[in-house]
Length: 426
Image 1 (tube, one colour):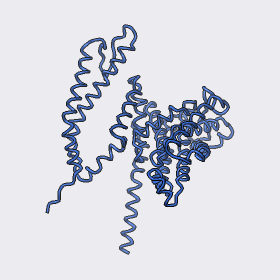
Image 2 (image 1 turned 180 degrees about the vertical axis):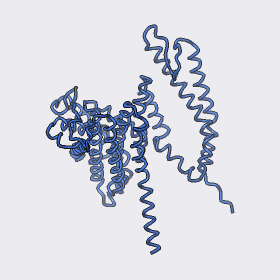
Image 3 (image 1 turned 45 degrees about the vertical axis):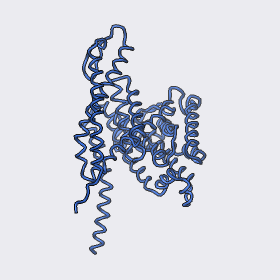
Image 4 (image 1 turned 135 degrees about the vertical axis):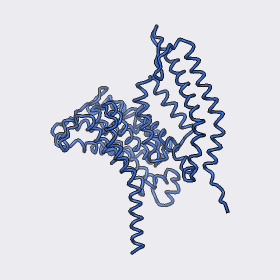
């Protein structure tokens, strides 16, 4: 009895540990609108949640299955267009609650993924990437040809409030839409995580790393890729359905190569090797796209620079950067990195801010209207034609750069020490 009780306690403990991140995530999603109450903040959080679902769906291909797709936005777009058309079916739409509408988007995305995956998943690598690009461009071109479904250049719009109320909620307010999207975010993320734990999800990793060995063990690499592709299309369609509910309009922009490239950037930025990587990437990119775009017209330039720096120096993405510190923390030496980080990263941040100031000043100097010499940067208003601001920006950039460069060796030494086990004393 004692052994059985201990075993039961171990199982209960492991279940608690596995459920704890999801419980914390649910609490955070519930409390966020109570902290950020402005409609603009709620709108940003809605966009962030939709992007997270789409990025996690894309990571099922790239991170888990090793399939690089250049046209995955079409599955989200088709799912969204289907949901908008359902919104315009007055009698049918009025008989279903809005909360189930994303399922229809998922089914349409899965249907298209089933058709495309039947021939695109026969091969991986460059062949699959080129097929995905061709299919994406083909469907994007059809969006201005098949006007009955895609609506041409103007797109298709709908009204979510015509749906049957859910427990009396008609989703007239943005916060009500937020909780609907948050509900689907939690459900979709949990289902995608469970899929990664299934035999198909596990074998997708094996097929990604060594398809020949997987075939030798008796698994069909093609069918593993196909099932992953179909599942990814389903969750991309759910993201499209949520997009339709939130914005009530779908256009050609939801299908084109730009949207597909954006989700590739988001996933790489967060880290394709970790399940929570796309979540971090979606949060970071949405903040860049929304908050930073309010401050500067060059937000896309900074996003591209961040992406290039991530690929070159941190190929594991933001998640990989975080997980690099796990060994040092397990050894109990994580605190040894605090001061070296401060000595190096603070000057590096000053260097980056100085360089950004120079870029903004050059942009303003070249593109401002005649006579418009004043600009505001970092909440400071000054004359961009004066010499002093340029001297300050150059001085901050150079001082930060050389200081960070001088302290970098000490940081590397501290990093090596933090990740090296101490010799056991006899």
